[in-house]
Length: 380
Image (cartoon, rainbow, N blue to C red):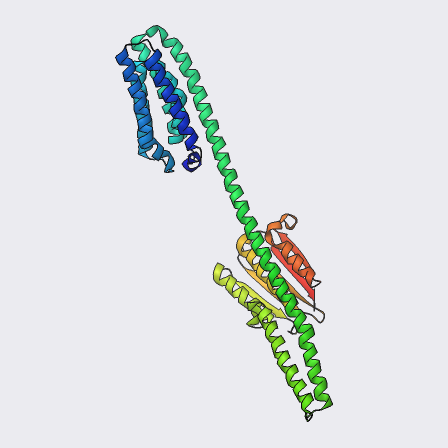
């Protein structure tokens, strides 16, 4: 049985169809059938009971979204009322056009198929006692109706299931697109903050430092009040510019040096996943431009995130290597690897874009037998 939540979106149209078929059949039986009037009334009452059973229980059984004994009871009740109606007036057989689709909405295929067979055998069974000569033709018609009903039920079920899968896929894509937009916005904000911090550090802060140095060189004792005032003003503005740099710097870097920040990221990774992650720093540590530190830190964060989400690794290792003219970040894991050429969803494009901002180069090596190595080298 397909998900009743999917059925419920079409429930209004289905109920209108069910009602039209029931009213048409009951009306035709009462007005045009040639059986005794009391039999016609019994048949119409049985059709009305079928509609009442659906309205009282069947509707709720479809909407609630799960199958239980009550659904099977509704199916059995519909078959019972249908049998009474057909026994009273065989014309009610036309209600099969409404009953068979109902079964596939209420119960699983394994229950709906026997129900379709049973309801189609009602007419041959009734005629076996009333008009035996019609039984062979009834059986032929029932066989055709059974095959057609089961095929249409199976086909309809598959169509609805595929529609549900597409709806789920669309919903996931919408969520992914919203998440990508959010992450892109955050990355853009972070990059712009880092750029501004670097600009302030490299221009204003250094400019104020140069002014202070020049003024103090001209008058070391600052006897001239105007020079003393200029130095105080320059120092105040230098402090303000440094405060701006601190405010614009990512929180992880604001709490310490780049190696310390990388170590904290690795420790958090180990705490969250239980997978050991070691950090090794080589070369002479030194202060780097804020933009460079941001790119290196973000690359370490993204690489460890990929290990957590995709690699199923037993361990990870991070290397931060300081060279005279560059800094190299290497993140290795012993996980299952992936195809770098088809890994658009692993954040590599964002890492490459950030690397380009500081004229860096990102390389990725991955093999199912050896794991993954992500290496970022930036001039500094």
